[in-house]
Image (tube, rainbow, N blue to C red; front, top):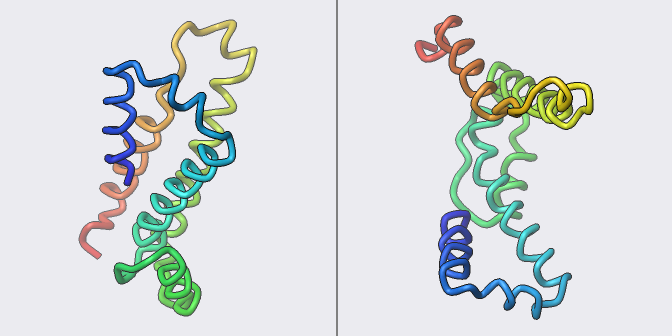
Length: 129
């Protein structure tokens, strides 16, 4: 879904079809974006909670997760929550006036969190468990 959205936006930019989005009602654009976000979040939950989730629709996937809360990997969940918190904290730092006055370049939040998470997993030898 994410790839298809990117391809759609790419071709719209090439053919200068940005005016098409101005003709679409705001609720339709908002619904499309929210739906795509829900699908992306749902498809990545198996990595966030560290358990196997069978393929299926959004509702089926969330029901499966909620019925099997006892199977959640606490280490994966902790790393996921800490990573999410770090992303939110770095976003706040980047948007603060204090940081903007002192730096011309924002901190690459996702890259920093990715490198930190990989380093933690490597140092704790989580790939061997």
